[in-house]
Amino acid sequence: MLKSIDLQSWKPDLSLFREKTKAFYDGKLDKGAYKGFSGYYGSYAQKGGKANMLRLRMPAGQVTKEKLAFTADAIRKYQVSRVHLTTCQTIQLHDLGPDTVSAIMEKALDAGIVTLGGGGDYPRNVMCSPLSGVEKDEYFDVLPWAAAAGEYLMTFIKAEKMPRKLKVGFSNSEKNVTHVTFRDLGFAARPDGRFDVYSAGGLGNQPKFGVKVAEAVEPDKILYYIKAMWLTFRAYGNYENRGKARTRFMQDALGSPEAYKKAYLEKLDQVFASGEDLTIHPDATPVSKEGDGITVDHPRIIPQKQPGLYTVLWHPIGGMADPDVFCALSDALSQIPQTELRLAPDESAYIINLTGQESEKVLELTKDSGETLFETSISCIGAATCQQGLRDSQSLLSACVKAVRAAGIPDKALPQIHISGCPSSCGTHQIGAIGFRGAAKKIGDVLQPAFTLYVNGNDRQGRETMGREIGVILETNIPDFLVKLGTTVAESKMDYERWNKSDPKALDRIASDFLA
Image 1 (cartoon, rainbow, N blue to C red):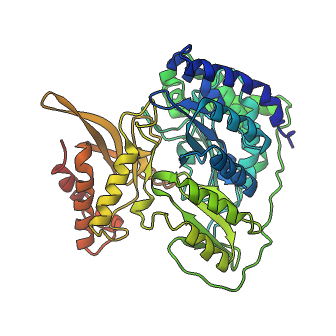
Image 2 (cartoon, rainbow, N blue to C red):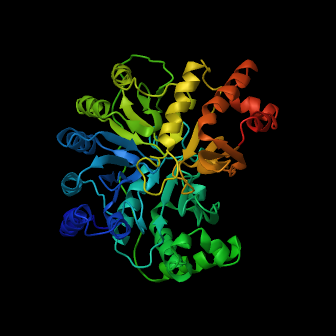
Image 3 (cartoon, rainbow, N blue to C red):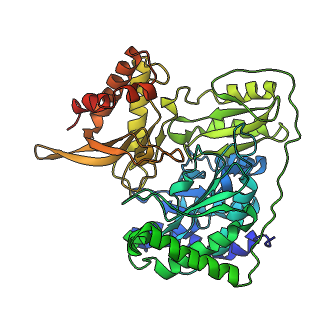
């Protein structure tokens, strides 16, 4: 087993962040130079340059009670006004002043929370199916392997010639909620307890599905495949052009997915032949807790595979967690044995290993959660905060939820939608049943805020599909479009999925009345 990373060894790096951040706020460093510097530390200046955000890495989406308590204490101490649960299973703190962002970053290391590599050209937070280990229909518990991969990837934080991002994920079933079949590197669990490995995929500009480079890989060998990924990019990646410094562009650079697979396997052979021992045997922590005999039934309560135990789903609208609710939840979980919070790629959080009585308490604490499938929709942080953003995706989602609630649209008449403020696809718009990407439309001589509409994306393993682009809708018309769509589906007495399959052209007909 690899040696554990000494988190304290990174502390000397943090003093430079404090120095450069002060220079930026004093007007001595421009925003471009600061962005290029600060991403390594997991922090960026927000739009307007008056505050910073900070990304707390939570490897495999696992937030222990101790990490939850640290985050809650920081929220209280520094009066953090906005908390975002991200699509990469991290926690972002927003509206932080220069001294605050530096202080939280430094103290986080003492709590075992790393921010380094949260942005920039570094390995990002390793993703994992959020219910791994407790989900009834999973193939096997992939969390120990994801956690070990996350620890190993931290050794690449200062490696040369990294992709602009390196996103690694693990899935525990064909649900593929972590999108492993179109990540830079993805490990898809199999019923036989092994992994199929996918490589060089990704969303964003010129999206690509991953190439299956290996089948039936023994879990204890996964680090060899990670090392091979790095070596493949070093050899064939376009790290001189930032626009193409992602692994997915290697498929085209090498001529075909088959040529990419051949190149990757050559590097894998080199890793195995090097003599370096990367075999791992991570420890799994079994759930020994027992139920209390109380049976509960609620749409947000999920029975676990452990008899008598439950998980509670909490989905703040747009992933924007109310700081007071977040802190109250931390206080409550500190008193509940063997529980923890798991972050999901759709901006949800799951509180696992609860008895019936405990789940009812957590359900009440999280009553601000979205209750319908539509209300669990996904939105990036949006242009009001993000320097890269084009449109304010959070405001759009809020307006849509308000309109759908006012119209009384029933649950499942609308799907979970995905909203990205720009082509970066942080809202994963390309694989949603309905997706929106920030755009603009000239009406007369004036550019109007708008979004491009995508439909029929699918992320399920074996059925992966990129959404089909229909056209552009003015931002102000999107809530009305969704109300019209939801009303039509409700009148059919079918849910959205069955309605869409029953008449594949119906969605286009409804959308045509709203296209700009």
